[in-house]
Length: 307
Image (cartoon, rainbow, N blue to C red):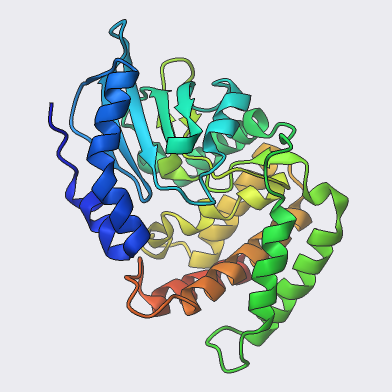
């Protein structure tokens, strides 16, 4: 059976030579995996930002999905996280070939949290935190190493950068304190848990997918729940953007039993790092969002969570 790559996957090739090589080799790799693992294609392939996902049937006829991802640092240990969770709060890993970034996963439903009231979705995600925040295996990179590198870049931003300097300085100060705290590592965290990365399942109502795991601080997790579905907050009559963001933030903190001050610090740091990356995009690399709109969002979130 010939596997036709979706247009979105073919477009990965525009990101550079490494991506082009990945796309070129992908059809053959998928066929090899189907043959070796004795899988049967069971639908049209879909994709995320960094991976192809193909519905399949196992040799016994059970529904599953074959996921083949681009070899990047963020997803290198995805299989390891899923293996350690054993399906508790997350999609079940059935088989993996880490060298080829291939995984066979249980098939979940297409329904995600985007159609739930945002505060109800926050409560669901906070419940998943309690299941997936387990001791980190030694192979995971420490969050603090990333934060130190990103903060060094943030410190190098010129004062003319379109970001309030007080927020930059605040983020630098907070990141130094967070990195110096020994509790800043040791827990396996997802780092990208948001509305679209939680799917409905049969074993339990909601399960996390697509982790980008590191050894870090659980309080680091909140920010994606604030910046995703951001446009909804600007379109709700009778509610200010600030109030909407603060309701999400406090719902997550309260439902998860987190320390409010520590959660707030990580949100500010993450949003300033996000602002930095948007300003450092390489020339001719397609952007995901408008720079001005994205920077405005980063600044708005960093301000909103503070008293």
